[in-house]
Amino acid sequence: ALRRMTPDPLGGRSDVEPVLSGACCLGPHPAPSATQPAPHLRRAIPTADPALPVLLLAFLACNAGHSVYLDGPADPVPRLLLDRIADALPPERYSAVALDHYDATAEVYPSDWGHYAGAVISGSIASATDPDPWIARLKAVIRADLQDRPTLGICFGHQVYAAALGGAVRANPLGPTVNTAALVPTVAGTEVLGSGCSLLCSHSDIV
Image (tube, rainbow, N blue to C red; front, side):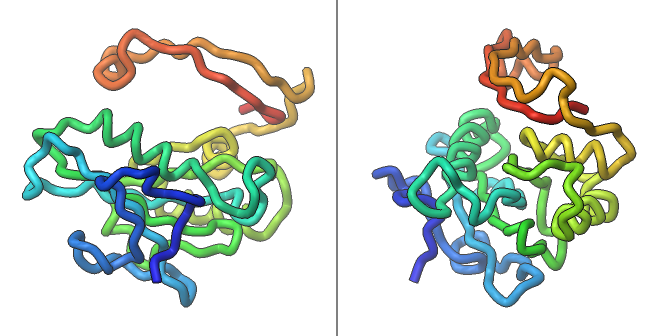
């Protein structure tokens, strides 16, 4: 049976394929460090040559089992990321983008990081300064496996990445904030983001 990461991960589309790791045309994937294989989500780039490489990323879920937004533990972020990354990838270089989903809160990680072009660390209801064992393990993984690998940290993800590498993370003295922030990309970033955009932000900690 296929394991679904959202109530409807296909969203009615035929170019998004939820399958178990190692069970699709991408070939064998590294087994996670627990007994269950990592759920695998793939999005094809319609205009690309199918013979081109697939961009394979590890998605480290830091909110697993703690969803307060949906009915159950389903997490919409991997599919949203998949869509955005696929839209940004140059079709002359990649045929698809794929995410292997690992539950960092259960300390499940790839057994071989060499299979991945990069990683994504998700947001969390936890704080990067919390003493939870899974957060300590995540920081160790960042230091050992991710600091020299392309990595996107989202909210908690960038905070725990900074903390793992010696940055200062603390509670915002102004308290939790919910606001908008202008994103002004670098010259290289304009290729993906254009001239910039406005982002919705919600944070309790600051770096």
